[in-house]
Image (cartoon, rainbow, N blue to C red; front, side, top):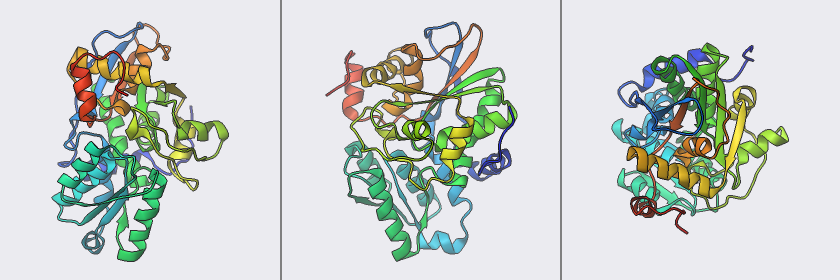
Length: 330
């Protein structure tokens, strides 16, 4: 497989690795407890990052490119929770003002976690797209720098450092299974993995409810869908009609996309909790869920790495997991 010319390269990912050192951590890969199929399954534990999700990598990468004047004016972003928390964390460590814009649908636990960082939080609008409009307004009014949650080459390069670690930790990797939303995580990992090992299969996984990247790939162009409530709230939101970075990379390098119902997502969360005592939010458990539901065709002796992207589940979900609930909370 030849790798087409894309907005992010392996060299960009390698440079990002240097920028994020000391902020993001190199997370472990552990063997999964028995899952269906003949493969060997591994869990890449991005839920162990300082802010509870992989997003700290992209935030650290982007802020690491800003000059002192830009840092003094501050940074702004829109987020479904995890990216905003990562930007706020990195900004606070560097003494940089940060404003996080979220829609009214972001779970209250994630909004509370944002406020706890000391950043400014602006809540409003019915979608991630609305929150991005608010962030763009602040860029114009205050001269702040937008740290886009996914459609930014430096953010994507930061997320791609996960791919470098995977190939070092599991050299025989044959498949990487990645939560898919705006595409920053999938695009970054795919660039890092495919540039080095083009034979590795890259699978993106999302919820059935308003999976915008999946719909965009099917249409051949970025499309918009209204957001719907889902356990995988961190995967909500559009990709932007003017998406110039993640869409072309995902289209070129992601080999297949799997969509899950809410019960399947809950089953993935339950497996992580019951078998590993890991708290994973819905969007982070979709790789496990895809395997449990039989959506992946894995041959004997293949090494499959499942990205566990975040730990920031809502309290009611954690309680339900501890109670052994077989079905997701209403």
